[in-house]
Image (cartoon, rainbow, N blue to C red):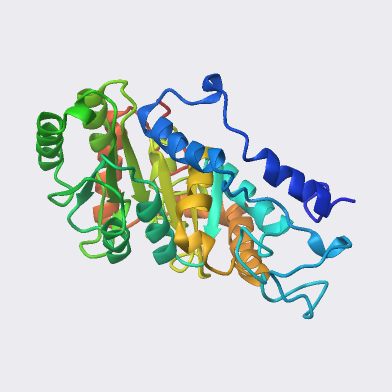
Length: 351
């Protein structure tokens, strides 16, 4: 029996089998060589070894002859207005996974995880992803939700650099490399927290310059990664409103993107974009994922409707809009550096 997205619906036995299979530890060859992702996988391996790894799978328990102790299924059976529980329990459903895949593809990412708000998303990222011994380097004007998440993180140190100041960013990296031998040796990671557009000063992150400095100083170690909050660029900047990362063609260079839907998208909720390792880390280590009710069907439908609009001629109009002079000058300057001739018509440079 197929679900709404064409994927087969799982029986209770199949669901249980998937959960058991997820506990199997990975072979060494299946693990990523990059320090950042390797350390995340090690945290997941600890949970697999203890048989407490959470896998986000479809829970079609109502279709089987089982006793369900984790949800209330006396409501509307065909089109529920609520999800009924956590994503790891009865709150996961085929439609939300379908929309996550569609949004990830839209932004050029491997995977995504929808949460109820941008605040929850930033809290999830920063409380779950940094590993012991990591350092967080953050722009002085990042959002309160980022600060809240950083306070709950396992990072060894949190360092601020001056707002949008590339020289200050470089100096901070020099200090980190000089004072943290594990990072210099490539055993621990630096996580950089920035936003695409800062609402406080109405300016754009010099993202390309920051990425260039990071690559210059860390080479191919893979232990400096960027986390960007695209709240104020989603639906406004980039091809079809895909955001600053898509505008600059940096999809492969940015580890984590947070897109929110309460601003230009006129809805609510947020999605965290990254790879499948990142998605598993959030499902296993983020309390705002584990201990909260999943976004409801109507909420996810509203998000999908906004993306459907961006995929029409309206989205092409968004690509051709001229933002404020501050945004335009900043991004056009960076595109001239990369020899991109038409900045605001859906073209982007690929590294």
